[in-house]
Length: 170
DNA sequence: AAGTCATACAACCGCCGGAAT
DNA sequence: TATTCCGGCGGTTGTATGACT
Image 1 (cartoon, rainbow, N blue to C red):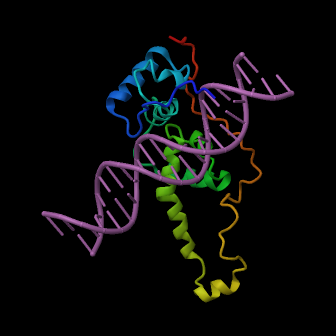
Image 2: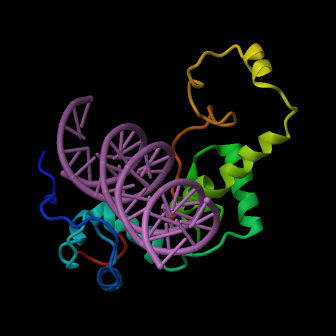
Image 3: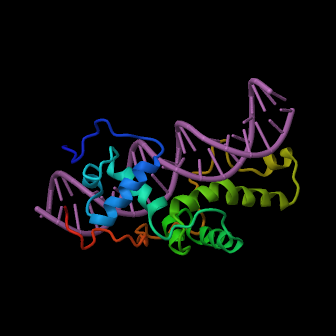
């Protein structure tokens, strides 16, 4: 299959301030019309996906950076309990936060916090745990959160990008 | 002061669904 | 209707930085 953008010499890794400026300037001028095709005229040797990710997660106006508030953390925990790893849905409830940021924060902080809460369970010796464990050495079949299974997987993204907006292809 | 380890964050990868043709 | 392409999502990895020994 012919990819619309060849993989030749595509840059990877951290974005430079220069690249950020190029992407912002291009989007300001022409809008978002096709990530895969935009990179070249924007002067970026990046994949469309990389550009999109950079824009959505860091450059888009209204993105909050920095510490999560107590309220935000509680919301994340609550929604994660209900929805599982549907980060984009959770992100939609937290204006200015991105799914990637929430996901990272969850793995870095919140999941641990919940894990530590397991310590509040009644004490059991290893022998007792073995005795009452019916499971084998394999891990549980999935890590799908309990509350989730029945949910349809069509998460509607709420990243309100000006995507394919009025601006015509240059 | 130097080396090692742990943590947090940024970015990439692969897969899937929907739209367009 | 079938195929192709693009955007979006979630999982995972790589790297920089700070804490600890």
